[in-house]
Image 1 (cartoon, rainbow, N blue to C red):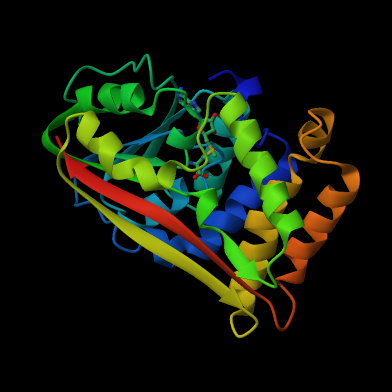
Image 2: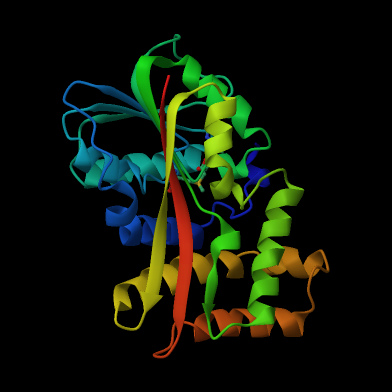
Length: 268
Ligand SMILES: C[S@@+](CC[C@H](N)C(=O)[O-])C[C@H]1O[C@@H](n2cnc3c(N)ncnc32)[C@H](O)[C@@H]1O
């Protein structure tokens, strides 16, 4: 994947969105990811470090190596981790498909929101499996935009979400990948694959979820592809504007929003 193939882009609003996403979902997605003292962990596709700080905090005695292909994201990740006071992470510019590590280097590999952007996720899992020690574990977290449903329902909002799904597919990604995690792990030859769905549910009794997820994570992500969706004539401007307005409408006092992430674990 080149920098241009990343559907969400690398601008600063996207950085804020990734941080909001990680902070809101920490407990739901990561509370059961704890690596033992002295173990080595590869975080592949660390982005701006939104998950790196969570990994470093949950496993303060593990030695974490975080890689990404974007220098700007790596610089932001390094700063985020240093500012938070963690010293158990080192960063490398590296491509998942050309990993600069000998085979069987790591006890654990962690990948979050990366496979959805790759044209061949099984090939990526095979590369990551190579650097995992026998018996080591793989953890993969992905979303699935087909799992979004909400009240009030809106055909325009569903259409706007579908634009993101189609745009991501056009550049070789799959934003519906969550439902495929189990077969992907099995195809890559991992043992003991287990997938657990993690449901985000937001209504106005959970204002942090409404702000952090419905508005600042999900709707901001859909809103981020406005230019591309309109330029590709996937949707007319009126339907787009209504779709985004209707997504924000689900964040009002009587609205609700539901989305499922999938967390897979397996062993080499
Ligand atoms: C959606 S971001 C997720 C970042 C982070 N894991 C998080 O959850 O906030 C996807 C990241 O994967 C990186 N990436 C994509 N393809 C990659 C590859 N082949 N090797 C390494 N990193 C890659 C991108 O540069 C981007 O930073």
